[in-house]
Image (cartoon, rainbow, N blue to C red; front, top):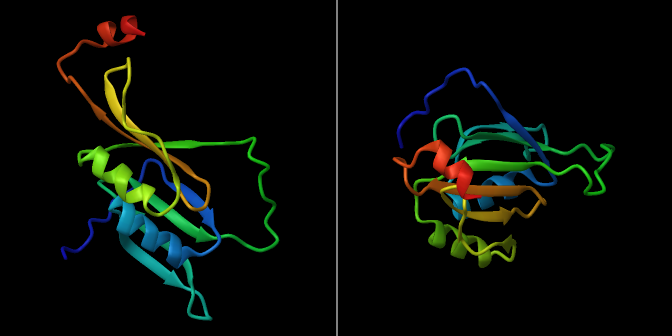
Amino acid sequence: MMPEDFYPMPLFVRMLVSDVAAAAQWYAEVLGFRSVYALPAGDGTQLMNHIRLERYQDLMLVSQPSDFPTSDGCNQLVINFSYSGDLQALAERAIVTGVMVTDPIFTTYNTYEVTIIDPNGYTLTFSQILNRDRPFSQVMSAG
C-alpha cells in the first residue's frame, strides 16, 4: 500500500456515526474507501476515522456522543462523488449489505448515477459524466 498524500482540504464532510470501526469497514468493503488515519479512544474503540475514495473525496467518520441531539430526518444532505469505477458493481455490492440503493440511472443532465443510503442513514450519490464534449448549454437545455 502506498503512503497517503496529505494536503489541505477545501471541504471536509464530518459524519457522526454510532460505530466508527463498523462504518469504516462498510465504506471500505462496499464503496472502496480506504482509511487515511484512525484515532483510537482510550477504550480501544475508534473515536474517528479519516477515509478517502479519491483525491479530495475524503470523509471523517466520528463517534456520535450519546448526548448529541439527533435529527428527525428534516435536514438531509446528499454527498455527491465523481466515480470512475463500475456503477452497477458498486450498486450490487451495496445491495447485498441490505441498504437502500437506486438502480443506476441516466440523467437528463449528462450523468449516469446511483444513490446509496449508508447504514447510518447518510445519502451518497456516485456519478459519472456521460459525454465530456457535450457543451454545458446543451446539457442545461435538455432538462
